[in-house]
Image (cartoon, rainbow over all chains, first blue to last red; front, top):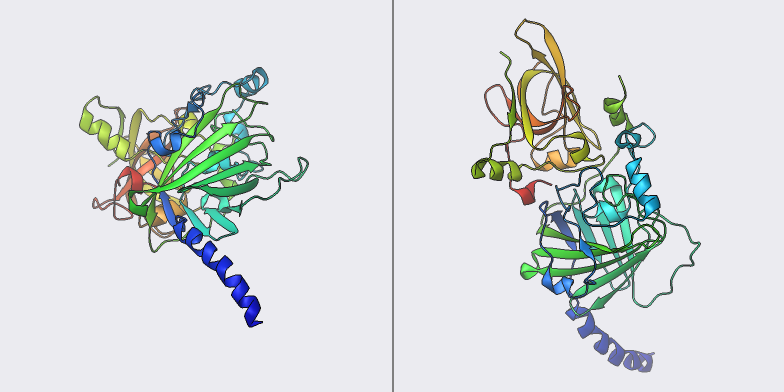
Length: 244
Length: 138
């Protein structure tokens, strides 16, 4: 038994510095509600042809404005025919968007960081994301698609890289443009400002719907003594938008 | 007495900065589609109802018109968790209380607005803070 422990010890010692060098993203983060400029450290890894969506935080695009994203004909037609009030019925008012729209606002997030798993809770709609760390296999293409999808993550230096697939179709810009089930979302997260700020890039690749790629830059400020609140969605809100 | 003002956004920088500081918090439905962020509206009236719910709360007030009759106005609020971080609770407003709401009007011209801030009759901001810095908005 003692001998076995001695065999394991060197492996542990090798692993410890790696863990110690990993930035700790754990904690509660308030969204910075203004549009931020691309972060140079993250932008280095974003394809140059990706259009930057400047609608993070409080900003929003109006009808038929997709911030530079180029919808394919079928997606464009769907956006043209989109009825804003269709999402404001008793059966639709509490439908959850995917992490494509939900991450950039308007609510805080909370991160729990482990070696093999990370959990990101979004206050908006009580969403929870799980990041599977390391070199894990892909899910089969026909595995269930959800609004949080399946996320694999790894560290590249001080940046956490998260690749998410298996997202269920949902809005991109909250104005009639939806992504498909086949979207691939690549995110990079890094700490800045001495750990007080968390910055992310969120890259969208969805050839079924878009002729080009898009990216959002999102930032949060660390806060203490706070946690994600409950979000009990009440569909009766839709009655305020019911036809008289 | 009732005051109702509908203002075009000022071109002066202080006004623009103030407006930016109080930008709406987008939510489930599109703010840009339903509300006009180029204008503001202020209404004073008596609270009839306050719903503290997701995705948006609602304040219903009766505004007294010049001819003595009343008309209903509704103000959509941010979600409860955001309001709580600004010092609100589900009992922040009571029926019968006179308040002044300012915010962004509905694009369809109805008596509906998106709340930016609320003041009590004595001028006290509900929640303690009328307008916060952008990064504290959410």
